[in-house]
Length: 382
Image (cartoon, rainbow, N blue to C red; front, side, top):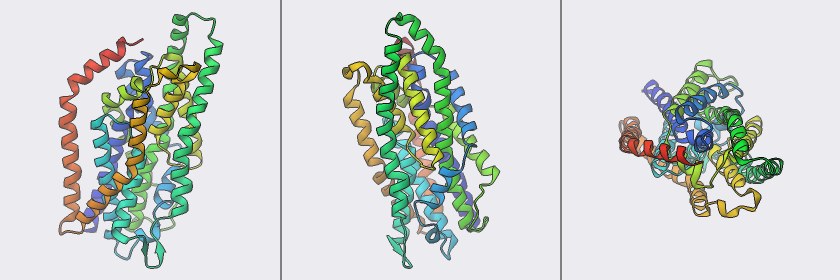
């Protein structure tokens, strides 16, 4: 039965990576599409390719997910299947929340969904203390997740604001049509940079989950420090495929509903967000790409004292989604962990993920025609 649970964990982990790419496509291409720097199809292919490439850059974020949030000594219980069920429940909780927020068009954090699912499932299975050890590594959660996830958006807003202000000063005597044409030529580079760092940050989270599952099941030693190549390739491929699948509902929210973005603003937002993600990945901080990009768009849109250009109501809704993601994903992860205790519980967990996927596919087919109309609307916005 152990191998069935391990296979289920690996399959669901890569499915989560797919939903991560699917859910977060907007992060790297929304502004480029909304400013007409790239066509939707080219933008998605470009982002998927660079997402794949970025996943191979480092393993620091993967290590944080695997060993820096939930005590690995607790997960590696005398009964490996228990630890695997916790990981499975965490993944299902993250998938359900990802697909829910995708359906609602909210650019919430896939990173926080995974971390929330992991926290909820672990506490449900072991409590806050187990055999004299803390289940949650509180300092790791604070120093490597909560603080950086708050700091990254707070850095992105003023950085994008300053960069956009500098750009506005440099182009103050240039005709708008020439300026827009120039920055549309630059946006594929800034968009690509953002997609690359998104892969560096997000694909590693799934690598970390599969890594710890292989340790728990005994396929890797407890002190292993190298992630198998097949895990890296599989995680990168799943995210790239998810990115290619895309999602117009979130693209429109990030690209136009937070602030009306022109090509200079799109360039500033993408360059800023990509740089922040590069720095955080260097330190192994699994920050939210969504938070960072949305904040950069907010800062760019507010430049030049045009605070009215920012749709603060939409921004407030996004902040609300940020705040509830970890607790909501934790609740789902906890509920799924309880399901896994039942006879055949692994299959119940797989059933929850399958139902969520089917509902998402049905919703996607229903909104396909709407998405095409939205794409046309975005292309008409100059």
